[in-house]
Amino acid sequence: MRMMFAGLLAAALSLAACNQAATTTASTSASHVQQAVFGRTPDGREIDVFTLTNAHGVEVKLMNYGAAITSLKTPDREGHFGQIVLGFDTLDPYLAGVPYFGAVVGRYGNRIARGHFTLDGHTYTLATNNAPNHLHGGDRGFDKRVWDARSFEDEKGPGVAFTYVSADGEEGYPGQLTARVTYQLGADDTLTISYEATTTKPTPVNLTNHAYFNLSGDAQRDILGEQLTINADRFTPVDDTLIPTGELKAVANTPFDFRQPTAIGARIEADDAQLKAGHGYDHNWVLNQAQPAQMTDAAELYDPQSGRVLQIRTTEPGIQFYSGNFLDGSLNGRGVTFAHRWALCLETQHFPDSPNHPNFPSTILRPGETYRSQTVLTFSTH
Ligand code: GLA
Image (cartoon, rainbow, N blue to C red):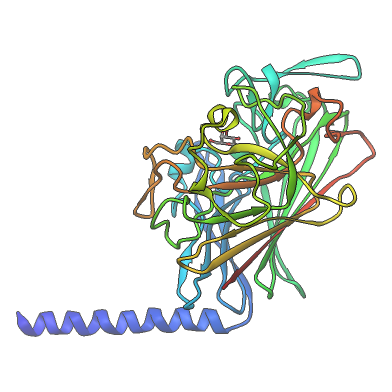
């Protein structure tokens, strides 16, 4: 019995050594992309998971359900790799329904008031799936669609290009929209997300990624101690259904001033009408952008304990900072309970409800034009 135990122990140890060797090999070999089956949708469509790895061992997993990031592993300041996004290692929880974990949201990311907008004299009606408003593309937005996927590798690194053709009239939106989202992991520890779209009829478009970040590594604690910087002098205040009032309000002397690194928890419970409306932070900041569509520093998130830094640059005019206020502990993944404020989203985007605010940068795409947007995430430590 003891011998058998010793034998098992030896086998386990050699397996561990083997795993160790495999990990080491991956982290020292050149970058690559691997593809595997992740699961099937109820109607039998195959969902694949693509693993992108760079020479430093940074690893991103993407799936073609929702063109979503399912996993993102980066090192802490000691070089230990940890998971920095919420997600699952199997497809079923995603199919059962999650609040946009890692997914691309569209056709219109964020809210459209009361599910109505008027374009070229015609009023369109969309699902009010976040009563009384329309949110993230409706009942079955781009996060719940199967995208076509093609992996590639070029001199900048491994990547995956996802394409989805949204039918004319889908979720109430006009025009057939062909959307393409490309993720590429660079040797410089950047993840570049590039969006493109064309349409057959004028339509609003606002695409972003809805990853939930927790830089502690394997989501060990809530995000209130993480420090955030947002390069914005103004934000768009909202009514109590999270629709912008139309004002671009100065952040100075408010809990929305993140121009210097500030712990997310420092003011989140302040007696402030906007924080009450958002149940915390759930607002769009107006980025300090010199020229429209110019790549601009948007935000930086820093976890003082692990040393991880996430920098975000974008061509978009805005960023929605959502402090995970609706996470309520009802979902678990990878041994973690996704409790209140256990992760946060930084969604680069055009402003919420732009189709109903002529003073906001336009989100209308017309036939013959190409929608282009790019966001670059950079991972480092200090
Ligand atoms: C966005 C919204 C939030 C919430 C989340 C998903 O970030 O702004 O209010 O709906 O998506 O739960």
